[in-house]
Amino acid sequence: MPATKRRQSNAMLYTLITFIGLFVVATTAAVIYYVKAEEYRTGSEELQQRMDSLASAEEYRSLGAIVGEKMRGQTNLGTMVEYLNRMVVLVKGGPIPATSAEVKVNGAVAAVQGLLKQAAAYVTLPVAEPNKPADPNAVAKAADPNAPKPGGVDPNRIALTVVMGDLLTAAKNTTDQKNALQQQLVDLRNRFDDAVADMQKTKDSLTAQVGAYRQEVDKIKTDYNDLRMLVQRNSDEQMKILMDRLDKSEASAKQYNADLLKTQAELNVAQNRLQDALKSVSAIKPAPDQESPAYKPDGKVILVDDAASVVRINLGSDDRVYRGLTFSVYDRASGIPRDGKPKAEVEVFAIDKKVCAARILSGDAKNPVSTDDLVANLIWDSTKENHFVIAGEFDLDKSGTPDYDAIPKIEALIRKWGGTVDKDISASTDYVILGTEPQVPPQPTPEQLAVDPTLTEKRDAAQQRLDQYEQIRQRAQAFWIPIFSYERFLYFTGYANQINKPGAF
Image (tube, rainbow, N blue to C red):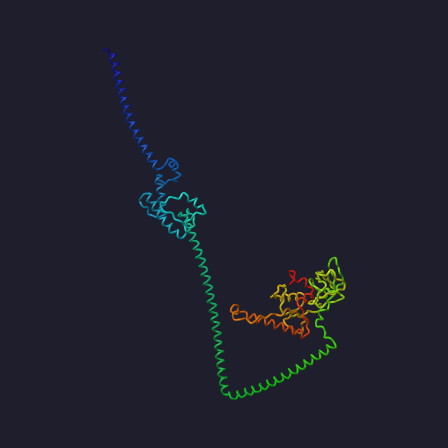
């Protein structure tokens, strides 16, 4: 074989061997790569499964936000475990047991639930049972006003912090109440100390008074003993003196009694003679009218303005006329009648020194007020204060029963017009106003007294008013003092038509 052809065959052989070697190497490398790739894929799937068991993809992407700041030298899971341990320490305290997170959490929950059950008795909060799922309708039930609410509290307020806050609030309220009670106790103690001090002072004062009284008692005892000894020594002599005095007193009393009987007889004779003399005189000359002062006019009308219903009267500030004073107007020809009923009533509203203006309050169109008509007010007087005495019962409002405050109201009217009210008849009394006679109820029976024990007192008071009424009436007649009824009194004061208006009294 030629050399050239042999060298060419060897090159091809070497090339084939090299190709086969490279193929074997490549195949081996491919097999090894495939095997390694399968191992990596299997490991990757296992790792993915382990990662899926640890966290979802969403949780893994938000791992930093879920875990928070990762502790140095710790993984994310280690950081969460460390945070969990801190929470367990906060709830139960240390040391932390070397156990699973489930055991740690269940232990902390059990401890918290026990505390919440105890706290519920103080803050009236419902306590959830351990490991019990939340009620999905809790919010709707809480919003329903008709739904039952355990303890009357929102069922969501079962958190430890909420309970602790409520307990702290309750503790603060208790502390405030304690402080307030403490302050009250201090105040009470101070008051008690002051009371004890006052009692001590009172005791000392009473002790001193008792000592003084004891001295006085001892002195009285000494004087009594001395007097007793004196009486014992002179009893016969003193008895004789006293008997003499008694005899003289009896003789004087008999003499006074005889003189009194003689004087009474002489008085009766004198009164009989006086009555006979008065009858004889009255047959010749009538007795003076005791009511004559009431028919004396105080002034007269000097000008009449019919359009303005105003009159002018010849009385002014010099005569002590004042605004609001009322007068009865009487006809100038017929004068003041016995019943005192006027033709008109006027009220002063403007005053000059000598003249006053008065508006016409009431009148008679058929008999109008004219110039020179007379005006009078029984109470008012330009020169003095008239004195009145009031007695009896008055029905001011015409209700059929006497008014309990009638006399004070009449007294107010009299004082309003410048008069004076006295309690009893005297030499200065000018007029007497008598109402109806007071009625005295019958003597109450035992049955009536059992119902109203004050009936006897009421009857005695009524009897006293009746006695006073009779006494005033008799004295007025004896002293020739004019007696007026309530109606005549109003007529003579120009106030009969104003008495029923508001503010009349």
